[in-house]
Image 1 (tube, one colour):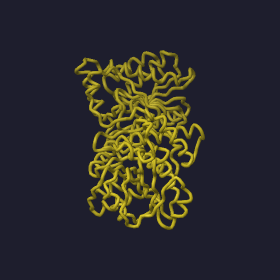
Image 2 (cartoon, helix red, strand yellow; image 1 turned 120 degrees about the horizontal axis):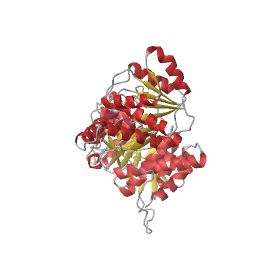
Image 3 (cartoon, one colour; image 1 turned 90 degrees about the vertical axis):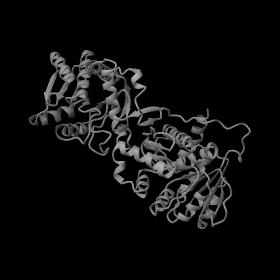
Length: 496
């Protein structure tokens, strides 16, 4: 796992590098600019028009250094757009060096707006050096207009440290620079991993502008980024058979939503369950039994439940299942709650009910997450800024004594045991109806055998992501029935 840092942590790290390790701000800026260019140069063509947007702080200084190293390497078709502020001493020094080179320079003024817009539209690359991690509010004034112009351009875009407009305390939906590549300093930033901000960072490359390792190691972590793309689970022993591989009960099938149950139940098998029992409404029992010969299909009408290794509840439920959910909670069986089951739980919570339960994994998408927050009196806006989003996930997991698997273009796993874990997704082919039902089945199957909710949440999400990549490689775009066919292969490859 890699650490995700708050802006203040990186700011403190920079100050400690200067005060404790005696590295000057100018040295750090020079190293940062060089490493930005080194990470970027392989993307450049010799004739590319490069436009650098330079703020008056250290981020702008980094951009000036990167522009100079690009010039030294032969990429001289460049324009510097400078904000008309005095700037930090290190920035002023870099600006003086740049002036000696004879760079084409344009100071941003109202009468230059049309010229700048035309230049941005004609650029091959736009480099964002307007703001770093010090932003405390939404973009405004000149910087806001520059970012609007840049985002409207078809040029490729590089962000230095973090796209301008993103910040720990800034709503992620606010205007911000949309980068194809972000070269970030020292540690990856929490603000880049909100569901509404990650795509705007593009490919992220982390470089170290000579921060000493003994300081980096002490930097506190705000969250964790999973640095694996493959799951890792112990293989089944050669003596395993259907009863020892885990028995999952799926409470899913209603008259109006038949597909979710089939997908979830079949995913359990592909993720190594030996037995799966499907509980459905009486009206669809004959259809369910005929369509799913591998399943044991039953109805639940208040009878005592047998012992299961795990339960998956919610996909295709519809509304009005509160009494059933309370019964399932009461068994103490490890439970994965998805879809309508989450909204049902939110309804119980909103009534002020405190419900005891066994190990619990909730798999909400962002709309269901909002419903859970409202149910426990967390205001919806708590999900807006990166810092409050991560804090809300931690608070929810503690209040509900549950592991959360929050589904978006990323996966956020929150638990009572450790900091929020982010799993990179960024595979839009997985954004198809039924994909979440498949994920629920995978996690339930793992929970039946492995028992540890956090382990099952992380490894299940990685298996789901890997299956999506395999399906996309084989098929391009696909439906969730097709996705199922790649789950078993992803699980097999995950076996250590």
